[in-house]
Image 1 (cartoon, rainbow, N blue to C red):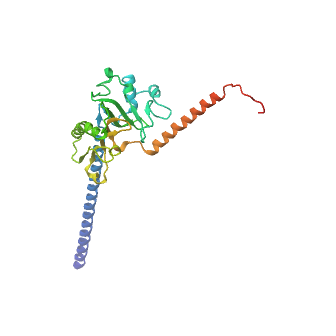
Image 2 (image 1 turned 90 degrees about the vertical axis):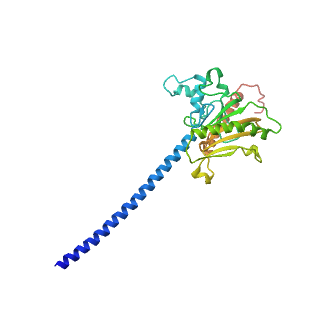
Image 3 (image 1 turned 60 degrees about the vertical axis):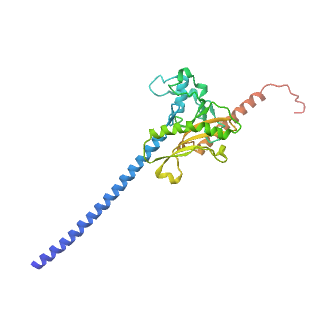
Length: 292
């Protein structure tokens, strides 16, 4: 009997040891998995903070991610009379049936919609309030998403300078100090170690279509070539403007959205043309009806 009890004891001890080791191993695996999940969540959070910081950068007092509709209304009517938001009675005044803001350039040759702000700017009222005007620049623009609040994803301004015979190289040379000043400020405002600034703001072959840029990237995704923010020089003889542009690269207008709105614009033009034609055709005219 004693031997049986001893044997049972040994068996129970061995089974207990196996169970204990199994539980310990499971707990260790679970702990590692939990740590991996926590690290992954921490990584996602850090990347989101980096994106949010860079994609809310500003230029001339205008902030990326802010509403182009609100900016347009503020320039024309001042601050909202009730709270911080504009009512539909104001919004309807500046929005076309297509969803675009009135005054938008729809034919810029790119998949975007650009609003020139100069027509709404009164320097004596707006400078230092809704926009900071720079003595070296003259024309100010924003590009925005043509839906929702009209999120601004690009801010542009043209230098007060004449287009020269060697326009492209002079344009890049003239813009570079401004681009560097903006880049240094943004770098100070976003102190994450993993943010990498890539300076390609130099003249290039076929430069009019290969823009000089300073890029901000997340070091983790640098190998993919993906950028979060760009400071670009637009130096094209066709426009004869010397333009500095700050862009949240990932927030541009998707092609299908652009295509759908351009279709709305074309359809509206067709309707307007048809209406004008019918109104003209329906006017009473003296015609010879012989043989008709």
